[in-house]
Figure 1: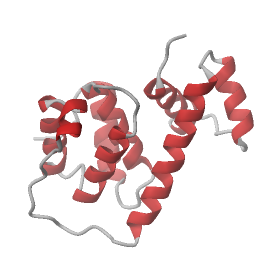
Figure 2 (figure 1 turned 180 degrees about the horizontal axis):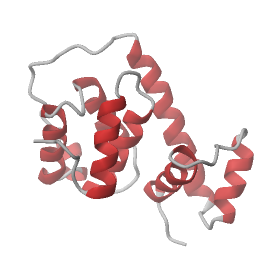
Figure 3 (figure 1 turned 90 degrees about the vertical axis):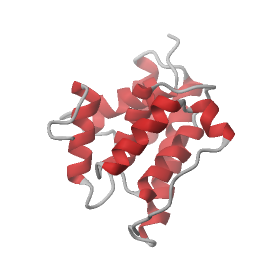
Length: 159
């Protein structure tokens, strides 16, 4: 299989986080299940590291709370190379519609930059947004809208 980190994350989400199956208690069991599903060990470990880093960063952001921002986000040249104008526009739209707040937007951008690929697709970034919103307290509505966007192409009442 030639799956990448995003494919492993999608598989974990769809089979354990979104489904009726519970996540195995220990990482070794989950890793074995992912290897049996055909994923490469290197990509599985990268996915675990990516998720661990996400959890750590989300925990560190809680202490700052959600502060509104009137600033405009300017993407660095490295970010622009990895996330094209379509992705940048999508992130802006998600923020303007209330799905992302400034802190979660920055977390999405940081997690996108942590993915070892030269360029991401809009679908890749939608999955990153979904995973970022998954465990954020008070973001249940935003998560539901994003889940609708990921699976059906557009949230039911995003205008």
